[in-house]
Length: 118
Image (cartoon, rainbow, N blue to C red; front, side, top):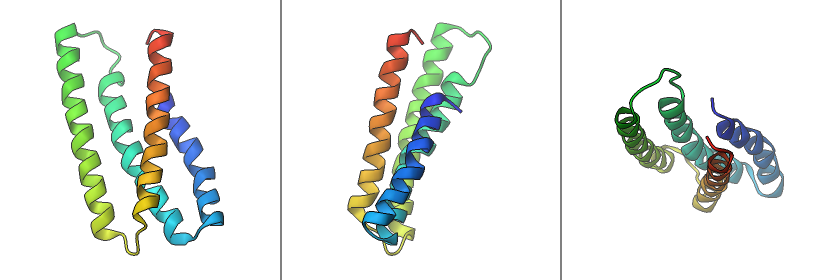
């Protein structure tokens, strides 16, 4: 797994506890489900793009990144569909809060990696 995914998981666990303490079980489970909708496709993307150690051509790497990004989008859409179809009861604000916080961590982490030269 990539460092961004590990950071997201490290933030999710205490965040889940805080949401459960401040609100209720439904909000906490919904928050975790929204976070998972962000974390799982990101981890899949990271494995596809950065998981291969062999050298490949720039064109092949770019094609792989485009395919991984498309897959990430489809996994996110399917994740939201599953959460709202199967999770009962569900708190929509908590789902989107979990997703948004993890997406923010992903964006900040990616920006830091780019600045570091990865």
